[in-house]
Image (cartoon, rainbow, N blue to C red; front, side):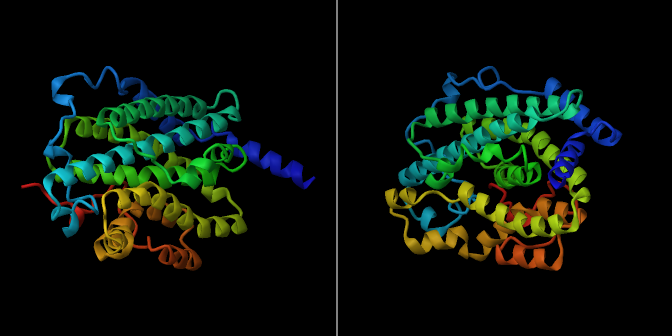
Amino acid sequence: MARTRMVRRWRRNMEVRDDAEYVDMLTTLSEGSVRRNFNPYTDIDWDSPEFAVTPGDERWILPATDPLGRHPWYRSQPVEKQIEIGQWRQANVAKVGLQFESILIRGLMNYSFWVPNGSPEYRYCLHEAVEECNHTLMFQEMVNRIGTDVPGMPRLLRWLSPLIPLVPGPLPIPFFFGVLAGEEPIDHTQKDVLREGKELHPIMSRVMAIHVAEEARHISFAHEYLRKRLPHLRRGQRLLLSLNVPIIMRVLCQAILVPPRSFFRQFGIPREVRKELFFDAPESRQLLRDMFADVRMLCHDTGLMNPLAKLMWRICKIDGPPSRFRSEPQRRHIVTAA
C-alpha cells in the first residue's frame, strides 16, 4: 500500500498541465529554442584563417578572471609556457563541459521517457537535449583544434558516468540540483571571462558566446523545475535535501573546476600554488562562493536554507548571501582589460 501511494505521488508530480504559469514558461523556453539556436558547424567557421590555432598566439594566455591566470607564479612564467598552460586549461575545461553535458543528455532522455503524454516538459527537455548535443560537438571540435590531449573529468566521475543518468527517473529533484552544480560554475566562469574584455582567441570567444546564450535557457528551466517541485516535498524530505544540496554543489564544482594532478606535474606547478588556487587563497574561496549565489537564492526562496543547511553550506565553504536576482554580476571579481 505504501509503495502504491509512493508511485501515485510520483506520477502526480510528473503532471504539470494544471499550472498555467509553469506551462507558459515552458512554452516560452521551447519557442526560444526554435527561434534562437546554434549549430556548431554553420555558426562557427572553423576553417577560417582567423580561427586557426598557431604557435605563440598570446590570446591563449589565461585571463585574470581565471584563478591560475591571475596568480603571480603563472604571470612570472615565460610567455610560451603561459600559452601552453592556457591552451591545456581551456581544452580541459571544454572536455569536462562536453562530458558533463553527455551525462545531462542521457539524464534528460531518461526523465522525458516517464513524462506523460501532452506534457510541455517533454518538448522542452528534447529541445535542451538537442542543444546539449550541439554543445558536445562544439566543445570536442575546440579540443581537437587546440590539439592537446586532455582527460577532462576525474577518473572516478568518468567511471560513474553511466550510472548518474539513471537518477532522474526515480529522483528527478536531486538530478536537477546536480544539473545546476555542473552548469552554474561553467556559466559563471564564462560570463566573467567575457565581461573582463580581454582579447581572446576567436575559437574561445565564439564558443563561449554560443554556450552562454543557450545555457541561460537550460539554467532557467532547472531553477523553475525545482521551484515548482520543492514546496510539495514532505518536511523530512526537505530537511534531507537541504543538507545534501551544498554537498552536491561542492563535489561537482570541484570535479569541474580543479584540473587533474597530471596537469600540475606536467607544467611543474608547485604544490603550494595548487593549494592556493583550489581553494585556500581568499580570492579563490570568494570566487567559489560567488558561483552558487543563484542556488543559495533558490534555496532561500523554497525553504531549504534552514539553520542546519546553513551550517552545511559553511562546512562546504560555499556559503554567502543569496543573489538579489538571477545572474547578478559579482563585480568585485571582474578585472577590466587595459
